[in-house]
Length: 145
Ligand SMILES: [Zn+2]
Image 1 (cartoon, rainbow, N blue to C red):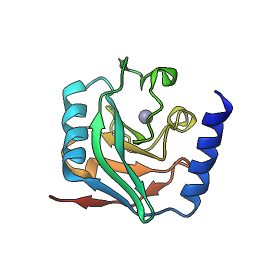
Image 2: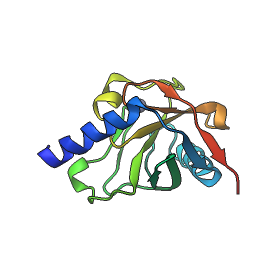
Image 3: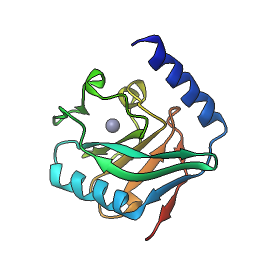
């Protein structure tokens, strides 16, 4: 990990201390749930793209990461393959086990500002939570178009 990435991570940590509102567009929620259901029983992983504004984070779209690897144990992608893309605000992945909590591995591989986890059966927002890099569950608002 180079010093630039470390610097970005430090900024992220500072940002999360004064946790700002998280807004997520409805199609992002639907996309995560649908993609996770399609990958089940394997884990799904997606990149969250959006904007960081003065008043908070807006998650606008999801993207399948390049070279994503799906397995029954975990889902991951090589971070060095990612473009330097400041529109990536975090990641989303699924827990086929239906445990709606980040694992230690998830927290060690935290990327970006927020992490969304969705758990089986991926039916609704009840099966989805947003976490910060301390593994704390954070509130969000859905933007319904
Ligand atoms: Zn996980």
